[in-house]
Length: 243
Length: 321
Ligand SMILES: Nc1ncnc2c1ncn2[C@@H]1O[C@H](COP(=O)(O)OP(=O)(O)O)[C@@H](O)[C@H]1O
Ligand SMILES: [Mg+2]
Image 1 (cartoon, chains in turn orange, green):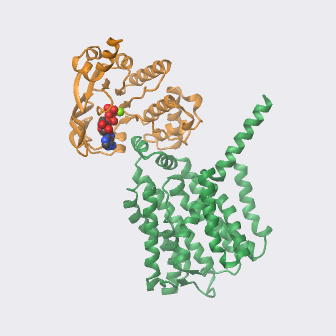
Image 2 (cartoon, each protein chain N blue to C red):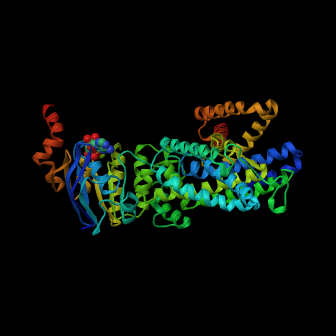
Image 3 (cartoon, rainbow over the protein chains, first blue to last red):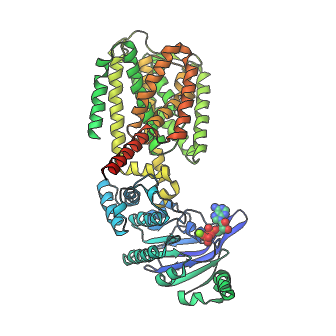
């Protein structure tokens, strides 16, 4: 197993945002993580990336315990992530943003620059390379975050709504990009609301509701799972039925 | 860009030959000293984005230790420079570990508190001259005392030090250190997610910054030959470093020198017009600069000139089209 999360819980004060989350991830998988807003998906990612310490539970990555490791230690071990609200380095150029990631494995400036150039091209951002990150819109920022984390050469990437706010064309491009990342041998966990993305990319889906896993399985089956319909798709279906 | 630096270097080398006389010579030395201190502050406050309002601590230590070794052991004050740097580094490490847990304004406020505490302690500590302060050698005993009547020798010493600091900063700016500092300034959470050891790199910035600020304080004490708690540890000392760097442009190589080149002559003029009573005016001047920067151009003069340059470039292009 590349990643094992056992009974991971996280409380904010007396509020349990995540209660007993379970995830076993084999190398090379793409797993989807869905659930309504506030279900605890981002909190789970924060625990998996060292950004938040779980209140209880254990997390193992490539066989070693990482439950209480720092975010930078997670990055060094090979767990990368993007943020739901993009956190690009606004005043720095796109290439420089990616170089920050590249410096993790390439301490020398010249090598980091070369590695970053390749990634920027891979992510289709080379035309904008010297623009400051603040000149990008939300879709561009999300793409830059993906490029930046790729440059840190992770084994696992956690994508937190990296495709939200994209138009249909951009979504197709982003799906293609994720496929190419996967083809490099990188394992992915994807939080996404757009069913089309989940259906076309993932081999397995986990459904969260109120901090718990309420269902898991093949994407096709999940869509018809009663608990999922109830928790997540229910409102929309009911709305459609009424129309 | 390279030609710009060459022009600046030539102008600075020739300055004492062009503007002669005690007033201009002293102003030139003051200008370089302000640039050194601001460049030192800029490493932590500009590049790494940790706004310290307590750098007077390091400046004060740097200023006091050379005169302390002279007062108590009759040693040449220069010998106090490395000692001052070592004390500053130790103090920086002790202050840095707890204060770096704080973010943004809280960090800044903590640095003010530490600096004011140190100023009060120094002002009541007889060993370091308490409220009176310390004097250097009245007459130079040897060249080693580095006590000159003219400001010109200081000018060239300061110029060499400034060149060294800017060269080192330029080198670090281009490498991993500089990238990590800018990433930390832009967003610690994202930086950490990319493997940036934030605490360690902040500490590096603080140590470099504190060491050079200490050196600036020592150079000040060598030239002036006298220090007291207010002139070495006063909050105005920290504020001057910040305003000088901010006026030129924080986190830029040239910013501190540019800021000093405007601020120091301005201050010298107001002081000579209004005598020693000009210090009240200094506060008003600083307040005004802070307001203008905050309202119109937080990036300082470098950012302003960059913006004007791109705007006129666009206009020229539009006209051509
Ligand atoms: N830092 C925090 N402090 C307090 N409550 C939080 C914090 N982060 C998340 N929460 C709460 O935890 C719950 C889960 O949030 P989140 O993990 O962001 O959900 P999702 O990503 O599934 O939309 C929400 O109710 C949210 O308000
Ligand atoms: Mg979320």
